[in-house]
Length: 185
Image 1 (spheres, rainbow, N blue to C red):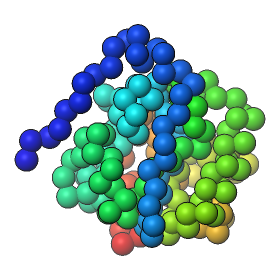
Image 2: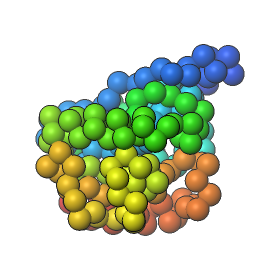
Image 3: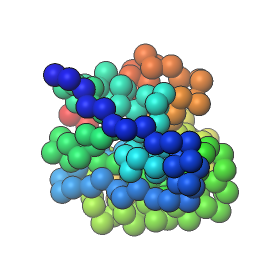
Image 4: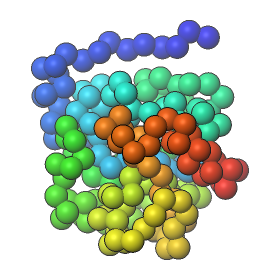
């Protein structure tokens, strides 16, 4: 099957996306709600989560067995039928996650808690241990399942799949995503 492609936004379109938001990708009965830290400018310009070339979310999702083929970000609409959703801790798009203030992450954590309570996925997977620590006041949190719930839902922390996260290459990301897939199957 030929993989879909989408028009790449221009540099001007990407720059103009600062501060924009992307709608959450939700549905009833989600097995896992993935929460990114916040959208990249590239994602905000395209309207697709994890759309920046070099982001490893989609390859990790497929490699871990959540999807039967590698999806293009423009196919994100297929995820709810698979029991998967996407949101963000902070809705505002930035060039880098480190542009978010601690107060913004804490407020985003409160909003995410409400969203999780309202949608009731079986698991919440937060993509980025540093953002999780800041947003939820868990300074010693590590990757993997967490002892505390958010919005009444178990939490699993995964590495940030951004290409800027050099600590985790794709094989290690797939291993962590697979742990979650197997635990939630």
